[in-house]
Length: 244
Image (tube, rainbow, N blue to C red; front, top):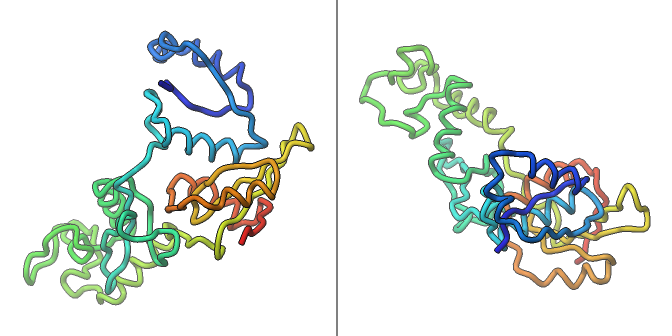
């Protein structure tokens, strides 16, 4: 079974680094074979690494494994409610905020946001509000007073919206699948077309014609694909060709 999957621009130095690391002695002691797959660039390497880790579940890879509890915050009448990726299509649903591996992580993220922006835990639904009394956080000046009328609820909702803005999940910006062309910086003749739909990586091909054939797989939202691709796609730093 696979022990570890990773990426590097220099395989020799990466393997030597593993050999020198005392805390990786157990992994290296079980290693019988090392194989590699060449990619045209870093985007392809990141996408392939995330895909293979999910498919093969290597023993020593914890990050990038498939997450079945993926959730995000969604505003309902100004109050954040958790939405889960197994019931909501994150690729096309607007006004989702943050990507969290679990409910616990989402609650911790919202509490940190409340501390940073002086938001009320009671109004956010993070704790029960005492009837007619300010919350404890207001008494220690961590809440602006939406719980007791010191701050209008609509003003609190506006501040919450601004606080969440930087965490907004972008909807998939294309009507269907696209191919991202990547050229190796050390070999101009080596190209790859990475096929993506709904922020989900479907595979890579050496030609556009072969890439079109990859657009036949069910493409559910993938948080790792989103994190890898969101910036280059939305900023236009990678060449994109629609396949539809």
